[in-house]
Image (cartoon, rainbow, N blue to C red; front, side):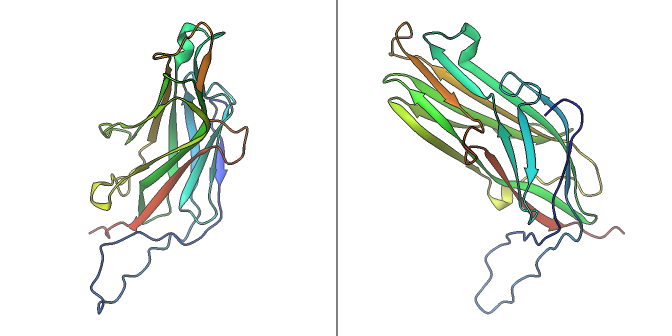
Length: 220
């Protein structure tokens, strides 16, 4: 995907906000139903892990998730690599047009990829999420250790009370900053290569962001 804006559209559907657990005799709350389409514009894509044209965004048909797929997101260390290859990052700046009267938050994120870590080598995946004008959230990180030669997955989950909601009635860009890094550790970087990838070689390898929705309070 280029730095120019690209529109991604999805069909209208139902998206429910998870609420607090209710007593058995209590009636369930009404489901929040965004009546219109969600539209995501990719304002900018920056980083060594997502050069121009290598990242794509798609929204699920039920408005509850969007997927980011990469084709060149690879961190590696050891034989045949450059000194700067050990760390890669990608910052997505998204303009999310939400249906009128609704707001959203990121409830959870699933990261997937493939890794080859020699015995003694380590890898790390990091991410942070924040709306324009707000401070970054606490960075989420996941560690991996060799020997590893398989698909990997990491999940960031945000409790309901800790979710950061987009301000109602305001257009705030949503920023996603991710990072992959690999360290040789006790492995021999002159003889072996270790890497971690987050890419789209396999269509099951991508990053999925799950959305939670709620209705904005009426204006007085």
